[in-house]
Image (cartoon, protein in one colour):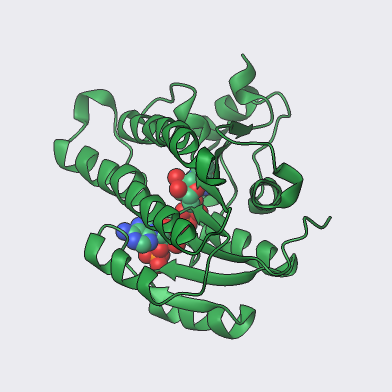
Length: 243
Ligand SMILES: NC(=O)c1ccc[n+]([C@@H]2O[C@H](COP(=O)([O-])OP(=O)(O)OC[C@H]3O[C@@H](n4cnc5c(N)ncnc54)[C@H](OP(=O)(O)O)[C@@H]3O)[C@@H](O)[C@H]2O)c1
């Protein structure tokens, strides 16, 4: 499958691990030039060698560092806002400090990255595409996920506002909303059958997603094949949110 990303320069945040890592590899396979943000310097060095990518160690919750990082990068055609965190607790045990951390990374920092990418694209007259990596948690209640569900619902709201304001500049903005995606960390987190089986039973396709199954729709949304798609929140959930 080829979504024609040759001659496109795409920034991926959260590229050092999990879904973002697979997205970076898939976009490189489709011919994109990559700029990768993460915090893990060792992993960034590996990715620079493996993918020939421009890599930058940036904590996206540091607004000044994000702004500075954008000053030195090649002209962008796309952004994948993938960096994110989850802290899980039952409602009765939720801590304000944890809610704040989730919101700071998943909402505020992602919005700052999107703002910088939009400013950069407009400044360089690029009609780009932004893909926010949201979650099925934006669309359905998941036990233990109060802060995470709220943050991803906010991310989808952000997608719609970005779509509205940036559309007239030719910039498309969409979310993808994956179900449980089998990154190494998620495989460990969902290893307990008592937790895994009820979730699997609620997914009509009866299985979790692979990172590649998230990366391919992201590549599609970045590509000219999606040229009339903006403001969409695309479930990649095997039907979980259909009922
Ligand atoms: N896995 C799932 O089941 C699933 C399902 C739906 C949606 N998602 C979403 O997909 C995205 C990736 O999840 P994942 O499972 O692949 O997670 P992961 O393996 O834990 O990777 C998270 C990535 O985000 C980066 N990151 C986190 N905080 C950051 C910060 N302050 N500054 C810069 N980078 C930061 C990490 O960078 P460093 O490691 O370099 O610090 C890492 O590259 C998240 O937005 C998550 O909410 C995941």
